[in-house]
Length: 228
Image 1 (spheres, rainbow, N blue to C red):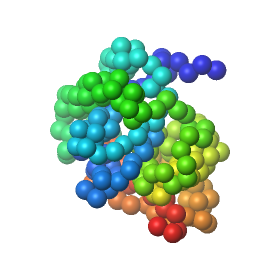
Image 2: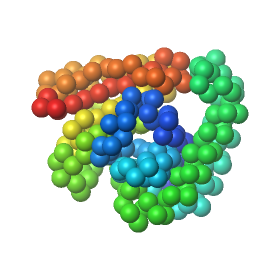
Image 3: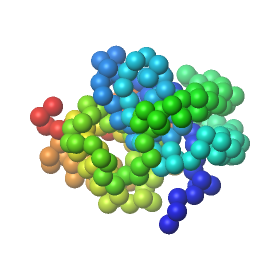
Image 4: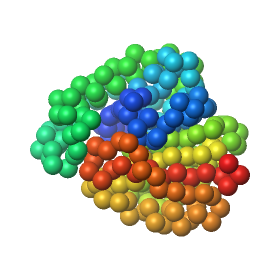
């Protein structure tokens, strides 16, 4: 079945948010990073401007800048209406108001779009869908990230998540997944099964992070090869 643009929710975050979501140190930012389900985040663009290395993976990179911008405008209205109608579900400490949130997302999308064509040519933005295998050798990357993708959508099923994490671990020495909630801001129903499955062969931990926008969404899941 063809992946349709009308199903895409382009909603990207910036470098500062990634640093807080994934406890990224200055040393981490110097690593070879691959980020899955990155969407229209400005993370890659901002890192590239700093002379650092990141490869972003997402299905939406098959679409054009114009298509993505048009879709973002539709999604922005829908998402912001939901946020404004449910402000009690969020913490307003770092991001103070819904208007500030909207401005952040517009800025991230703009920075992403300005970098998109150049980044595709440089193979920093790669059209790909997990859990399909990527054309990289084992342990190519130091660090793999999943922002608001894995664990968030239980309808994808536990097999999808296990296969996707297996591919991430094939490529990366360490992976970090944020948040560990589902769309209802509850602990993902797949979390315990994933910890149990991967805990046999990998070092698996839940760690507190600085970032919290969804109430209770201030933890990430980390998985490392035991040799690391």
